[in-house]
Length: 89
Image (cartoon, rainbow, N blue to C red; front, side, top):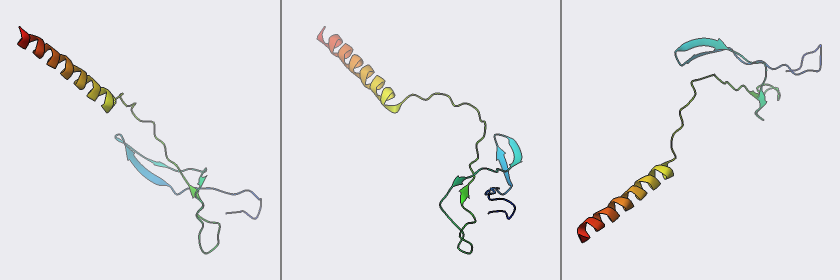
């Protein structure tokens, strides 16, 4: 929306309520990323996405599935080799 007093574009989100990680609050933003969408009636309204970020609990590292499968395969090979050595004696 352009104001009649200046040529600057004004951006303002709706006020939203959130509940995250046991905390509840309200938020808003005055900075949007361009969505490329426009209202059919005036061609300029509703042109932004307002992105929300929260400071959360840091995630713990999770091993890659391929690494876990490799360890299982390697362990199986060692167990098989040991079994063959026992059967030869």
